[in-house]
Length: 245
Ligand code: MN
Image (cartoon, rainbow, N blue to C red; front, side, top):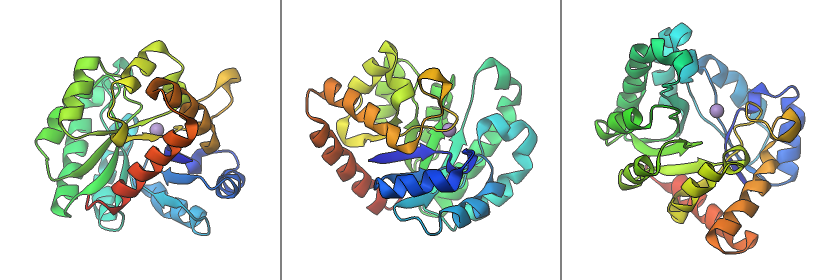
């Protein structure tokens, strides 16, 4: 199992979640919402196998934390994975869009200068803008659009731009999400939960192993077995992990 976008440090009992994820042999990308959380998250996961930590600055926090861009850029030197970064165009955060774009540009430039990174990217309400930024930083590495919620046309533009996609149970619950996933290239798809921020039925936070639900839905969309989906996802992860950026 693969949870390629999980806020491990934000669970009520992160150590217990990690223990269970390790027991179930989940591969985890622990994304962070602020670069200040990077060190603590590294310590938290230090004894866990199959876990990587990404350095990030969530677009929803940019309004108050844009001064941490410099710290984020310095952390990019120390990790192959960067996230959660990106842009949020929803009403609540549109007033910080100028800052958001400065920060996103800054981190993409840092990744380019370092030869490329793997990026877990938030693009709610701002897919076209995110793709514009990626187009002007082609050496930033491999973009993985997390919880893609744009239009089919935007999805095709993202495909052409070489983007990957991480998709989870919350996204796959809706008809629109399922249609989008069906249009994604299977060799550039990974599973995620976005837990504990994303929740399942009954408002219970999603846990890394809940990606099983996504695997079943994807198997239906691809017209294949869960075992075949898992093989494909693991092959994708291996390719991404060995890619230069
Ligand atoms: Mn997230």
